[in-house]
Structures are given as C-alpha cells and as structure tokens.
Image (tube, rainbow, N blue to C red; front, side, top):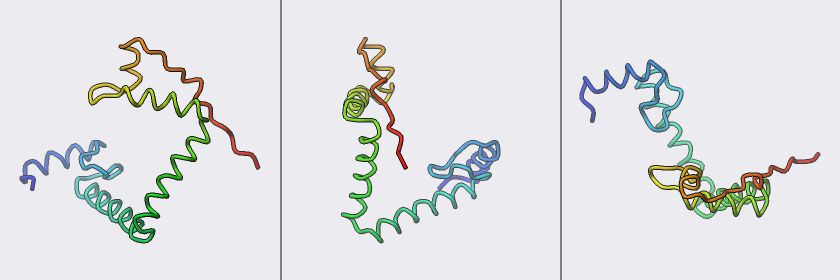
Length: 115
C-alpha cells in the first residue's frame, strides 16, 4: 500500500490528467482512477463468467478473424512479421528500420463493409 505522501503525489499527477492507475484512464483523481480500474476489471470478469472460458476465448478469436478479414491474408502476414520483430525496447517498425527489413504496410488494406 502506498504511503500517504505517495498517494498525494499520485493524486496530484492524476489531477493534471496523467493516468497513474492501470485501467484508470479518464479519472480526474487517484480515487476516481482506482474506482474506474476496479469497475472495468469487474466488468470483464463478469462477461467472462457469463460466456464461460470457451466462449470468452471464442470471442477473442472472432476479433482476430475479423481483423484478418479486414486487412487480408498478405496484410496479416506482414503484420505478423512486424510483430515478431518487436522487443521490450522497440516496436516492430523501429526494429525493422534498424535492421533494414522492408515491411510493406500497403498490404494492410482495409476492406469496407457493404450494405
């Protein structure tokens, strides 16, 4: 648990618009961010309980499939190459630039949905 002084410092940062609690984005104070993070976590947990483990995993898989359909097979492969180059210190794009690897982002086409 953070000391009173640490909490006051975090609260001051939160009041300046900085996110000081993971999941607390948008909170105007430390306490507000804590409540937001707790509510968001609880909401996701509730949804997971409603769907069950397999349903929750399937929901995530559908999101990935939808994105794959949007950007196409080639775009998905290029994105995978780029993601494989990422490290804790650099994004995949930065690593690719440094290593001289060409990533063709034109393949990241987005299909528009028709009526």
